Amino acid sequence: MIRYMLAACALKVFSINNATNSAYRWLGNVIGAQKRVKAGIPQFYLDRARKIIADTERFDAIKPGDRLLEIGTGWFHWESTILRLVHDVEVNLVDVWDNRQFPVFKEYFAVLDKTIEKEIPSLDGKINRVHEYLSKLQQTNSFDEAYQILGHKYFVNPKGTLDQFPDNHFNLIFSSSVLEHVTKEDVPAFMKDCYRVLKPGGLCIHLVDLGDHLTLYDKTMPYNKNYLRYSNSVWRSFFENKVQYFNRIQRSEWMKYFADAGFVVVEERPEPINISDVKISKDFAKFGKDDLECLTLNVVHRKP
Image (cartoon, rainbow, N blue to C red; front, side, top):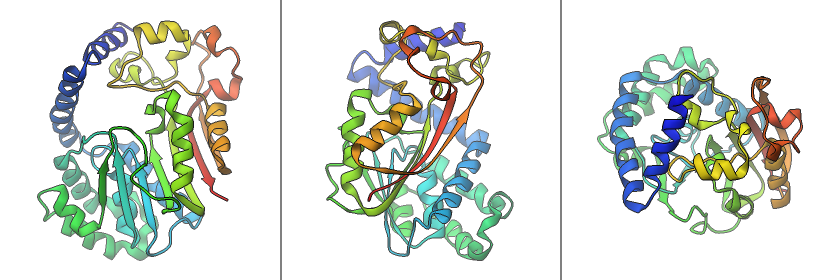
């Protein structure tokens, strides 16, 4: 718990102004890239790769020539590139700031080239195509060169909106562990923005992480929902920060935001945990067991 509190304090300091924000992001990119290259692909990234392929196939979400949008594409465009290896599509990547780490991109996909038959066995019919793309990516020296091979289009919008895209533009919108970082006050408008740019009949597939991200800094604590202990006022005063913000929105609230934007739910797969050792704040007393115990929310919605 001590490291949890220290991490909260440090992130508060980095959130003071634009200069400290930039310092945090620079350190995160430099140190983070070194650590990720050394550690190799985490198992949960391979799990995510299998999941996005399975979901898009199960719902017949992608056709040749489709235009896709990944929200919050992050360090190395993992899901976007996985889908592009398999499908002839145009993938658009959007983020609020440039935190790309090309050494990690190159290392992860080099390792995947050696292990993909084992890790994603469902690609039997396309494995030669996938290896061909992965081999070409190993010859690149920058994201721009990789984009020329993949056809990716990368956008940075500090406002966190989708204003640069026209109405009814995408066949599929997807994200993984991103929506929880959208400022709570901005979520309703952002959901409506997603609805606007998605074509009628198009799908959006999202993995929303409802866990307490501060516990990642304290290995003595399990990754759970420790934040449920704290009232809104205490959380804002001592724990909430700008550089590693997460919104504490619960499962039923997310489903309402999607519905209010106009989306129709296709599938909802919550992944629960046991939180019997967490004392629940009065500010979360209105939520039932299905909300409080939901750690990860996998949802698929369609635009009518």
